[in-house]
Length: 108
Picture 1 (cartoon, rainbow, N blue to C red):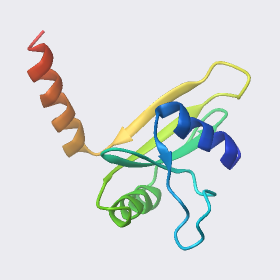
Picture 2: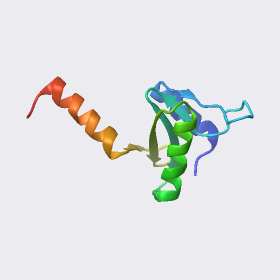
Picture 3: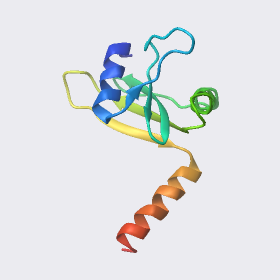
C-alpha cells in the first residue's frame, strides 16, 4: 500500500485537486476532484479487491462532495517500476461516456 503523499501525486498527475478531509482541513485522504468526478486513489503492488463496502464509501464521499460522480482509480505496481492505472466507474457513467464517444467518433 502506498502512502498518502504518493496518492496525492497521482491526483496532481491527473490534473485534479485534492479533496480535504472533512472537518480537518487536511489532505490526508486520497480523494481527488476531477470534474465531474470525486474519486479515491488506491495504490498497491499487485492487486486490489473491490467490494460493495468500499464502493459504497466512494459513492457516499462523492455525494457529500457536491453530488459528484463516484470513481475509483487503482494504481498497480511499485513506485520505481512500470505501473498500470485503471479507473472504476458505475454503469450509467460508462454508458454516458460511450454515448459521447460514439457521437464524436461514430460507429466503427
